[in-house]
Amino acid sequence: MRISAKTDYAVRAAVELAAAESAVAAAGGSGNGLITAEAIAEAQDIPLRFLLNILADLRRDGLVSSRRGTEGGWRLARPASAITVADIIRAIDGPLANVAGLRPEQLDYTGTAQPLRDLWIALRFSIRDVLEKVTLGDLAAGALPPPVGQRTRDPDAWQPH
Image (cartoon, rainbow, N blue to C red; front, side, top):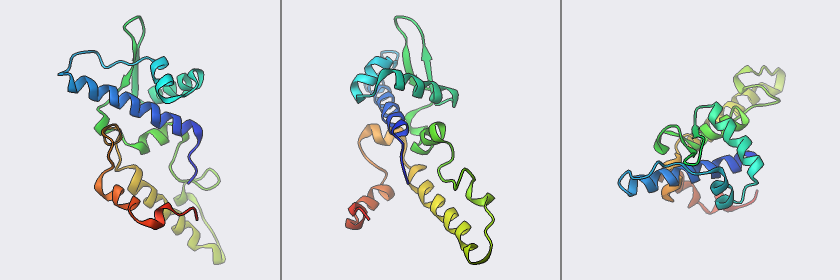
């Protein structure tokens, strides 16, 4: 699976927003939980103009909201625990797995290539099995859910095959 720079930036920005949400909760709810695009860009070393386009994409998908003005900024539109990494990726790049722009179930192979559709569907399931289990809340808290974290303990996971 290839993660684009735009998607990487989007996930990092969303985790920054989740951390701001968490800080407000830890402070007993004081503060508005808004963070400026400039602060996100600086914290995550993301070019501001690029970040603003990303935030617009995330807002269009209902994942973030914004408020203008001196007290303005960005925040998650839903609790961090209700937004998965898969949600962010889909908002930026579309479906998690596709072949030449088609979803795997839309493919129709003939002859010896027939099993490929099932392979692509199995691959999509595996990707979803990880990305739909990890929320922005998990990442902001600095921990992966146990089933996902367990995958990183296999030495083969670290091999650049």
